[in-house]
Amino acid sequence: MAATPSTRLDPAARLELLRTAASAIECGLGLVEVAPPDPAGLPESLRRARASFVTLTIEGDLRGCCGTLDAARPLALDVWRNAQATAFRDPRFAPMTRTEWLRTDLEISVLSPRELMAVRSEAELLTRLVPRRDGLVLCWRGASATFLPKVWDQLSEPRAFVRHLKLKAGWSADFWSEEIEVWRYDTEQISQSRPAERIGSIDNDQFVPDAP
Image (cartoon, rainbow, N blue to C red; front, side, top):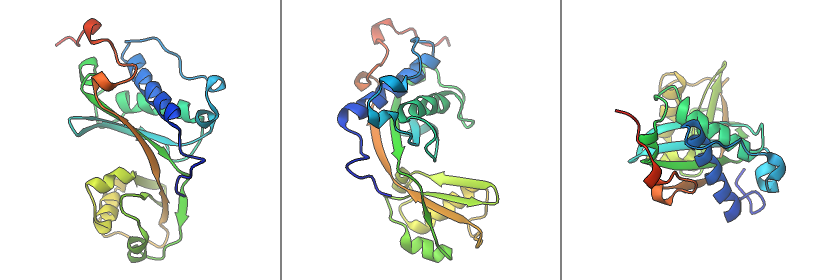
């Protein structure tokens, strides 16, 4: 499950993913006209089908997070689509504005393939979880929810991590069923602070803020 030297991205690929995510958002804001990445022109590591999440925060507060759990398209294209979904289609937030974008921190999580965990009880799951490394997916009768490994920063104890994930799925905190499917994964994280450090950022001297 864990990322190996052959699956971890080199610095150039990590930089390209940051550019891709920033360009996708700036395109959605109408600041640039850029097409989604063409896999034919990408290095092999970004052409490979992999899953990703894109997370946006402003001063530490979540501003959007969307992604995929299973590899379905080239990684660069997955990041492009997830960046736009996070900025403009996360149902918890209004679409991002230009003014907000200048204050936004960007993080990309590239997922390893999911690993099915054969656990017979919640107690067994709690003993097998690896805090700060494991992302977790719980599935039951068509409903599912996931926490990225970064959620361990807020929920550092395994019992709290699992209970809050069940609440996210719409179940009670003490719910358990023998039919629950449990999957785990880990991530390679790539982040970039706002906005002077952002690659592909808009030129502040030419920036026109949103109308009040």
